[in-house]
Length: 425
Image (cartoon, rainbow, N blue to C red; front, side, top):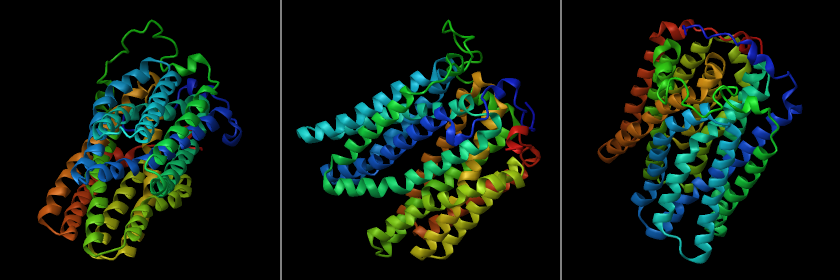
């Protein structure tokens, strides 16, 4: 591949250009994913709260997210290979069934009075291991929509994601206040809805297999489990995109921890802290309508570069304006840049890579994104132990500036072009 994104092949035109609102399979994929994500967002806030209530230990509460993240990192590449080898619909059925069992198991154990921290940590490992299977839905979009509809479909995915991120945590907190088990009951019910949506999909068998049935004997896919990493490192556009976003995540995720600590030091009410953190998701919702005009106005590399600039400027804003409502405004502005960047990345994966390699390539990209999170979080945690939150935010802002400089310095990224179908969407 070259720095210019490859144009879609004739096979990409297999899906008829039915309007998305009347596309039954897309509606099922979108609705099922919405149910799954809302259940996850609702339960994710409750897991550490349950552990805190049981043990009073913030360290043990933090272990849940750590175990979940480590399991996701370890499972990402193998799951990517599975998505290139087997029926993606069946993998979704298996993963949603396991998610259902996880939520129902925690709720049942709580009602029976036998819930333990070890069960919760085992649940974290299970949820983390099956998380990469959610990518099968995004990869299946290409089989159910026309190529020129892919950017619009991905934009609707971003709208759904940010809506779930915005509503899930307060819903989980409200349910937890009624009963500690209710968030997990809700997560189990949402998994049932997601499972049914996958069951009702009507996609041709040849489309469900990434290799179009060429690997029906179950042989090893060409290139092996590391093919996705090799694909990204060989392609200058994908390599620059992956490394830029890795740096963004190194500096981006610890921002929330730094703000929470600073708000605590400022004696801000818990409700104020919640509103500040939720501002990023609100900004994501507001930024979703900007995706289509930005994708038309800018080349793909410049979409990413502009997003990095916005991230850096808002980080510096939060550093020097130590006010909760200013923090909320800057987080919302930062969140507004996320949908366009995410759609840009997914269009590159969906349009530039052969379908039989997309699972592994998408998994490798996810691996690059995930690697930066624990490194940045650990560094920020150490800094917060010895420095002020504002000093920590300054350091994170400087790291984000490095991401801007790196992305802007990559000629391949600056010169990259949209696929014809994406440009004309």
